[in-house]
Image 1 (tube, rainbow, N blue to C red):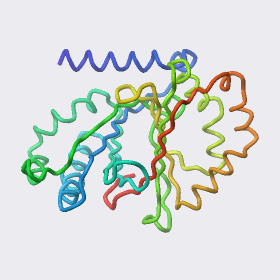
Image 2 (image 1 turned 180 degrees about the vertical axis):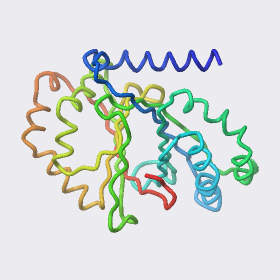
Image 3 (image 1 turned 135 degrees about the vertical axis):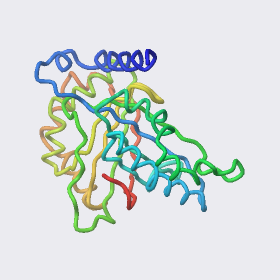
Length: 264
């Protein structure tokens, strides 16, 4: 319990340290969610179905019982290392999120449903490797917003973008850009904004990740064209505070499609 309490307080302190002081001290701040972004690296073949069945039939119901909801599950359509299954786990409690595995092994209903996945032999494992990152929601976008329903949900796509910055100062300034107008410019361009997260634990720090949703690729291209040509975006990105140097050194841009059992 002491270890969990220390982890919780340490991560919360790290999140505040990385934030702009004017945000973290604001009296109108709302509680922010935490996110685990999990990736199951898979191999094509029958084991892929085993992992998907585990996630849909065992993992998601158990996570929901812990208050982790809605759980997003996505196939990687465009990007490196396919096939990969992406999971997005939002939770208001940091302690619950970082101790999930401890709770799962005590959940008899979960353990029964997870048996085929857990008992997969080393010669035919259910997955190659699992990788995860821990994020805290941006103060200006404190909770995940599920995208609106569409007439053709099978065509709906998600864009997962990660911005790496060369320094901590650049990272903080990039987050500041979102709070100083970028959210509104996205909204004006018609984007469905799902979540924004500052990575606390993960690879290639410092970085931030956010997710957008579109009815299809045609809408994605059209809305990005609108965004890039928006006078307010040109003004914001051209500000000396944000263009004194390259505050984003690398962008990862992935196209995902939701599984039939995704809750997002």
